[in-house]
Amino acid sequence: MPASVGGGSMDCAGNDLVLAPHFSGYGAVSYEVPVAFGTIFARADMDHRSTVYFEPTNSDGFKSGPRTLVNLRLGLRRGKWDIAAWVRNLTDEIYRTYADDRSGLGVFRTAAYGAPRTYGVSLSSTF
Image (cartoon, rainbow, N blue to C red; front, top):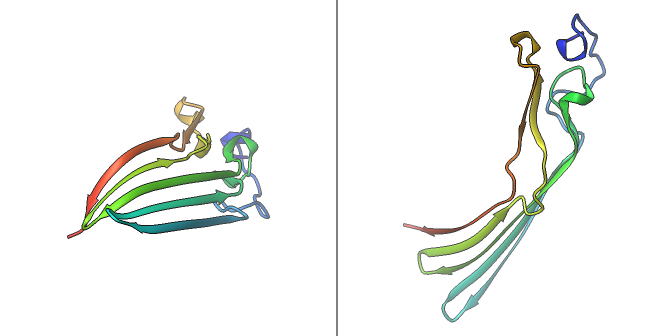
């Protein structure tokens, strides 16, 4: 067995592939409306992924549960310029993007997590 489940070797035949969800889906909707001073635009998107495993043993300690991320954007376009307010991971979902066992290095388990809710304003131009 691998170090994550006690060392040695293990037959992983029939297990899920590493980083391969059973289901993933993405959808987006956008809307624009012309106004006297430019164009107001809005966009919402949603990205869903079912559980994924980070190693071939499919150990519960090395997986990420299902996650759904929602992003929003609202802005104004005037000529070549856009200004927009946006938020990513609107629901502030906590999810793992990676996990492994480094006990051979004396570190034991490590994990990385996706970005928390972030938001801001952007200004852009086309040339």
